[in-house]
Amino acid sequence: MSGLAIERVTTDPFRRDRLSYGLLAVHLAVMAYVLLGWMSNSRIGLLVYLLFLSALNLQWLFNRGSSLLNNFDTYLRTDHWRDPRNADEGAFLQNLIKWATGLSAGQTQIMIAVYSLMFLLWQAALFRMVMIIPPLPMIPG
Image (cartoon, rainbow, N blue to C red; front, side):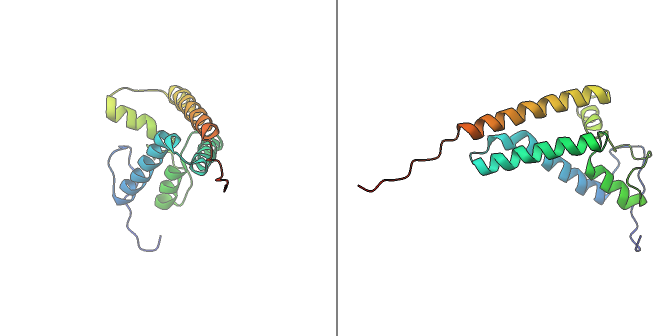
């Protein structure tokens, strides 16, 4: 690449450089939005949230359980969309759970839990959106 010296991906998922920390921050921001977005008090906000959750699930499905952010990181480092040496590719939540709890979860367990949680959050947002009653227009009189 154009003279940028970016550290190669290692097998240690938590040994990071500035690029990885930046993408980790974006990952965590996306996770926060996914977990808290259903609490919006705006119909537009909830609609955006519902569309975002749907798009996120579709990208995981078509990208074989890997995040576009992980693929972008791999592409910037290796000029390839996928790299088997990237320990975080398709395993961000596995690595996060292992780091936070010490527990090892399989990819199938993670995906069942994630899709179930996403479905519940999607339902909560949809029901909230339906339950928001717009104020009645003021009738002069």
